[in-house]
Length: 376
Image (cartoon, rainbow, N blue to C red; front, side, top):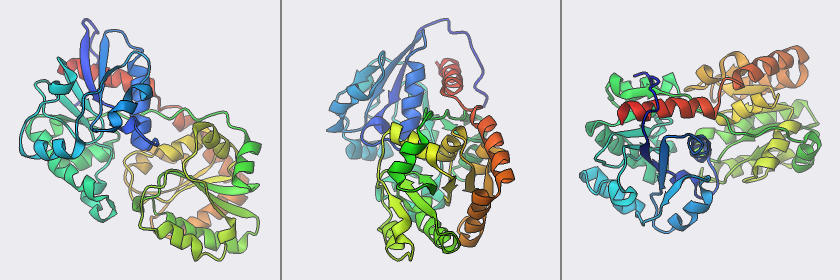
C-alpha cells in the first residue's frame, strides 16, 4: 500500500506511543525520537504522546520534543496487554482524548475508534523466539488481533513487509513500507574515540547485548583476527540488554581478552567519537529488520562488514562487505581485508557514504504524515 501524498488541508490529531523514549535509547527509541522531532515541526499536525507504563510515565514529558503533547495518565503495560489480547477495550482514547489516527510505534497496537498504524521492525519473535525476552512473546498474538481490527502495518523495509504478509498473514493491502531515517551521530573526534577505546586500531560494534546480535560469534572471529594481528582491538558500546551471559563468557574465554573493550551504554558524543576513530565496523547479527549501527558507520566514513541476513542487504546495498551469519572464519577474513586493503576500504567508504545520505527522518516523517492523512 503506497503512502501517497495528500494536501495538508486540515488539522489532524495523532496519538503516538512514545514508550521507547524512556530509559536508555535502543534502536526503537532512536526511531521514535527521530520521528517525533520531525513531526513536531510540521503544521497541521498535533501529536499526543502516550506511554504504556505505570511508573515511568512521569519521565515522559522531559523526553518529548517541544510541541508534542504528553498524555501521562497511568497505563499499566502488563494489564493492558492482557486485556487487548482478549478484548477491544479499553480503547486508547481513554488516555489520549479525541484523536484522528493512532501510531503504535512498538508492536503493541491498542484498540481505537479511529484508524491504527502499528510499526513492526522485524519478526524475530516469530522466526527466532528462543532469542527473545518472555514479555515479547505476546507480540504475534497482539499483532494478529490488530490485523483483525483492521490496523495498517508499517514495515521499515520491503524484506520485513514481505515477512508480515508471509509469516504473520497480514493482507498485502494493509502493509506499507516506509524506510527509517538515520540517527544524527556525526562530527566525532578520532583521537577522543581512540582514547575511549584505549586503542589506536580497533574493530567497533554498536548495539544492545542480546542473542540476535551474535556478539559471541564476533569474539570468535576476533580471536582469529587477533592471532595474526597484534595491534588490533575489539570495542563494543551499547546497552547491557540480555544474552544469558554468553558475550561475557566468550570474552572471559578469549586468549585475547585484554584487547577487548566493553564500554556499556555511551552518550551520542562518545558514540560519534568511537565511530570517528574506528578502523572498521562489524555487524554480525543473526537477523535484522533495518540496521541503524552499520548505517551510522557508513555516514561516518567507516567501512562495514555485515551479515547477509534480514533486510541488511536491502538497506546497506553495495556499501558493505557481506558475509554469511555464524561464519567466524569468513567474518575474520573480511575484517582482515578491510584493515589491510586500502582499495576495498575506499570503495566501501564511498558507496557507504552515498547510501547513508538516502535515509533521513524528514523523508520518513513526510511519508508517515501522508499515511496519517490518507487514513484520517
